Image (cartoon, one colour):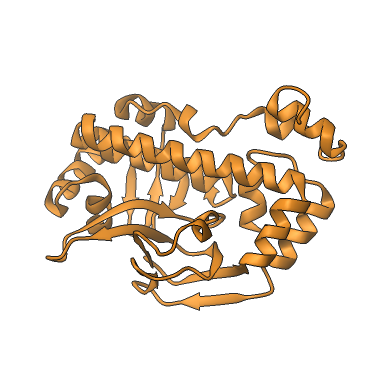
Length: 261
């Protein structure tokens, strides 16, 4: 299987063979394996490294005092978190596994060297950070304006495209490694309401869901029904056309629109 971090970053920026060797090395040096439903880091903890999901699913969440939980993001292979967290004194949210997870731990010093001395990787990482922020904005719109049917369909479109970007789809099929309760906590719906909307999506022939296998027979139709515009995922950016062998100054000029100071 291709390295999912490399697959994700190359959605935004073409990487050289040397860039890929570096990423392969740093994601293989410190591996941690966790069980399903296990906290990776909790609100209030002090982060000590950057984590990259290599396999499995995780999520960011906030939990209220009475136990109610809101999922703020699903993390799939190729996702890393939180690359700017060392600026903060402590975590303001928690991250937990949803399935068994295999992840790479990258120490702060290694990550700083990566971003300071490898321009193409740094550009791709920043692009990924901006996409993460864009996804958060879209989730806000999802919760505030879309119907329950649209919310759930929109989320399924997003997850399918994100998984496809790192090579984890097979034609129109992918693994959906979340429960209906997880989907409810991500969309602000009760489990009963999620179940009803999944039935409606099936009845409209927009999805086929068997166990953890999701099939989307007509992605364009599901996008239309869910008011889904994929532009917020920024999967067709000009950065992928940049020459990874360009000089650092030339590459920076191309990406940011002119000579850099």
